[in-house]
Amino acid sequence: MKGARGWLAPVAGISAGWIAFCVLVWLYGESPRDLAPELLHGTWGTSYGIGQVLFKATPILVTGIAVDLALRGGLFNIGAEGQLAVASVVAASVGARLPAGTPLVLGVPLAMAAAMAAGALWALPPAVMRARLGTHEVITTIMMNRVADGVVGFALGAGLAMKDTVRTPDVVAGARAPRLEVLADAFRGSAVSVAFPLALLAVGAHAWSLRRTRFGRELSLIGMSPAPLAAEGVPVRRYMARALLLSGAVAGGASVATVLGYKGYFEEGLGAGAGFGGVAVALLGRGSPIGLVAAALLFGTLQQGGLVLNGHVPKELMDVLQGVIVCAVALSDARVRARLRLA
Image (cartoon, rainbow, N blue to C red; front, side):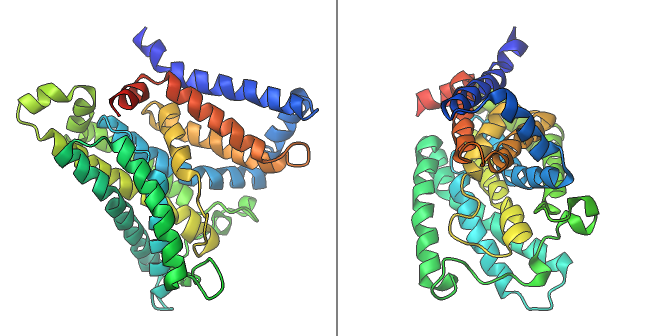
């Protein structure tokens, strides 16, 4: 029974999404039976479509890892959206200021490290308030998302953006994450980059660390029952703060896909929604590496599917479906209900 309850959230999310798809398509005078095969062909039926799905799945897979990491410690990091936004500005700024001849093996890691540091820094206030004051992270991370919107806009207007634009200068060639079309001609024209295999490695590293490291094992125990561990002298609040910082760092790493692997610069709105998408990926994935990847591919398919079906229904319909899935998953997930009750 416990295992069956564990799958209630993803089943509820996918079911609600399919019902919403049918209803919305009917309201626009189209047939779900006709549009579903077209959506499938435009996403998984061509090599270009597959590449685009993988590209769109990459940032939400990384932010999904970030949210799942926090959930393992009994924390609900809603702030991945703001952490990614701030990290993206930093990644683009650092990448643009590197010397022109910076080699790839140095440029991408430097920009990525700066982005992850920025993501962790943006998670620092919620982590400190959670550890020192007991302030709930749901409230503080949502607050930091709003602050990030203002900070990013101010930073662009204050000189990080090129004159009369809302975008930063291009990063140097050595800070660009190579597209997969360089390695596989089948992906030619699509935006998928080496950020996707790096995201898969991150999923594996996340699963390994939870099972094989002391920090990962104790963090999981804290998430299940913090009181007994605190009674045994385990620094529970310190572990929680560290988990939020790591979660923010991982969320910042998603900028490799959007800034370094796609645009080559940051512009206002780039990567928007990936942080919130990561929440749904983490909840649908149920802590399983395969589940996280499958959930990210589902949302990547929906995002690319919106473009495929744009001639029949507005592409924003897929955004509505993602929202429906997120709400259904959140309402069905016992962990989320518990964290929201505490908040």
